[in-house]
Amino acid sequence: MPYFSTYEPRAEAEAVRLIERVDALATHHDVEHGGVRVRWRRFGNDTSNPPLVLLHGGHGSWMHWLRNIGALSAGRSLWLPDMPGFNDSDAMPEPAPGQPMLDAFLDTLGATLDSLVGVETGIDLGGFSFGGLIASRLGARRGRIRRMVLMGSGGHGTLRRMKADMINWRAAADRDEERAALLHNLAALMLHEKSSIDALAFAIHDISCHGTRFRSKEISQSGGLQSALDTIGGPQLLVWGEYDVTADPRPLVGELVRDHPLREGTVIDGAGHWVQFERADEVNARVLRFLAEARA
Picture: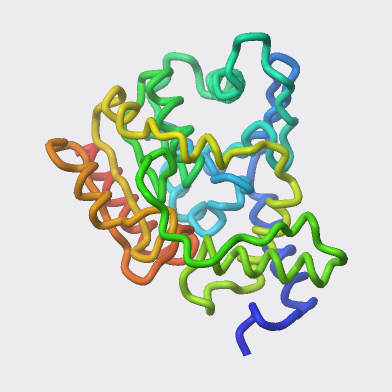
C-alpha cells in the first residue's frame, strides 16, 4: 500500500535520520544582517568552479534540494540557505516605514550570501518555486550571475492549474488530522505521482511547513520573473514538471525562451511541481549538463 494512505512511524523515523545524515555533511554558517540571522549550509568545497547557490520554495527549506545535493556538490561548493523566516533562520521583522517587505528580505539574503562567498564573486544561482522568483530578483540586484537554473519558478504571472483546494493544516484538531492535511497538500500541489509521496517527501514537507514564518504566496503570484531574467541575461535553464499545477508548463516555457537564444526550457515528463525531488536523477543530469555546457 502506498505511503500516502498509511501512517508508518518507522518509515518516518528513518526519513528523519536520512535528513540528519545529509545535514551532517554540511558546514553550517549562521550570518546576521540587520538583526536577522540566516542559516546557510555549504556542501562540497571544490573552488575550481564558481559557487552554486540554490534557493528553496515557499513553505520550504534547504531540504527541498535533498535529492540533488550529492550530484550538484560533487564538483563545486553548493550553498543552500534557509531563507529568512524559514526553518533554522530568524523571521523577518516588520520593514522600515516605506520599505516593502520583499526589499528587506532581499537585502538580508543578499548581504548574508555576499559575506560568505564575497561581494565580487561570480556565482551560479537558482531556485525552486518562490525561490525561483527570489533568485531572479536577487540576481537582477546583485549582478555577477554566470548562469541561472530555475525549477517550477514562481513569478511568471500566468494562470495556475490547481485541481484541488489546499487544506489549512494549522487548523487541524490533532496530529492525525494535521498529517492528513499535509499529505493532501503534497498531492494537490507538490507531487504528481502518488508513489512519490513517500516517507522522505512527507518528512521534508512536515518539518519545513512547521518552520515557515514568512508569507510567500502573494509574492510568488505577483509576477516579475521575465523582467528580472531579462535584466540578468546570460545562460538560463528553466525547468518545469509536465504536471506542475502552478503553471501550464509547455506554453509558458515556449513563451519564456522565445527570442532568447541563451535561455533553455525543459519540461520533465511525468513530474509535478517539486520536479527536482520527483525526478531527481533526470533533473541532476540536466543541470550538470547545462553547467558544463556553459563553462565550455
